[in-house]
Length: 365
Image 1: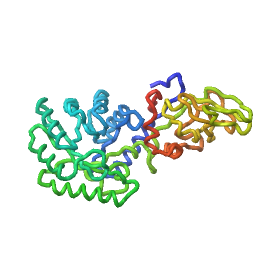
Image 2: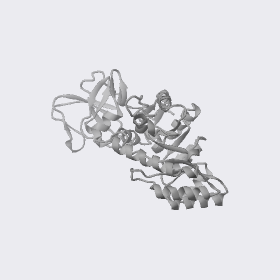
Image 3: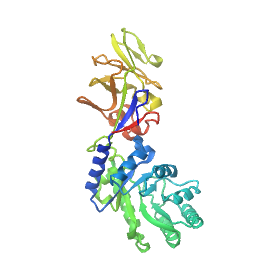
Image 4: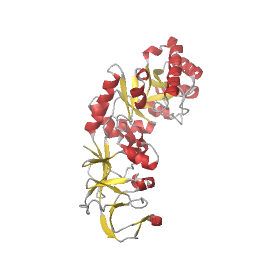
């Protein structure tokens, strides 16, 4: 992929992705499967490219996506590994597309169980399902009594296959007591389902924080997203975000910069304009952040606009039109992480990278 004429792009370092996935596999051991979560465009990294690379390098058992559409996009990109749709399938007719394309469907209710059985019968194809147990996330999933009924319905079916049972840990990075309760409820449910052949299916609960902080949560498989992309401590960041200066000027003391006179120069300053803004996912809440120019940390001057942002490059003496500017990543001895931007915006690192819009080219290196 070539950089567009508008010089703003991300670089996706595939060697870092491989290093992170191998580190996760080493952590969990080779007896535990690794599902690489590539929903939301692989957290802004590009799902088809990330999954395709991981499949070619044999770095994951399969992939997790949010919707049938995301799964179909991977199949269109010739990804052939197992793909689990982690979201609730609705309308239920979407089970037809999932089954036709060999996607694993999440079942979170008795209605969904009935629909997937009916769809698989009509198509004459097996439907492989993973049942979602609600343990405290409060998003989708069935509680234990309903899960037992779902197991019974699917087990009695000749067209649907139970491939797994899973839950999601809501607070594995913040609340050990609540996480222990979630895992305890999961284990209770597994025990009660022993008579249904639960030992022959994949049981999974751990996300990135879970697999690192709670070895008992690893079970048969883990679902890794944040750690794989290097958005957690101890893992190498995979994505860097760059642009170039397209305009530069010296302003007098008292000069206003950006909308609503949001910045007033306290002294004569050198102000650079970079072609990136909230239309690219560099949101207005980053207005108090910094970028790297000439290896120097330079503050944003005024509000981020839709397509352009102004930067105080007074201390970056060599800054000129065409100079590279780093929004996320390393330049010289300095580094700006997605976590730093997230702190400036009062959000989380994976929101920062997921918000990078499709008009920003992804360059795979």
